[in-house]
Image (cartoon, rainbow, N blue to C red; front, side):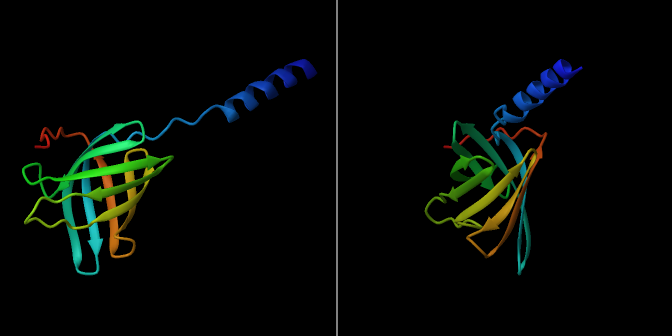
Length: 127
């Protein structure tokens, strides 16, 4: 009996110290930005390679703004890169990744942002 408990204890310990699977933000997302002036909705398509995230965010697939980001654990920081003559709803956002949902703040404290994983394919490629 004690041997079985010892074996069970070792198995439970091994499971508890197993590495946690890293977050993966690759995919298509529905985006909602909430500010004191109201809510803005849009879309995003992200690709992750290691800790580097690239892609776009915008009101639609036909109106993308390129983004770059860095994922550290479950914390993602995104920076927008609007083309000349364009503006973006935010310059930077800091998100906490939780499976198929990411939430955080835009430009430190100007509002909140939420990304929800979308099943719909976003086929828009960056130029």
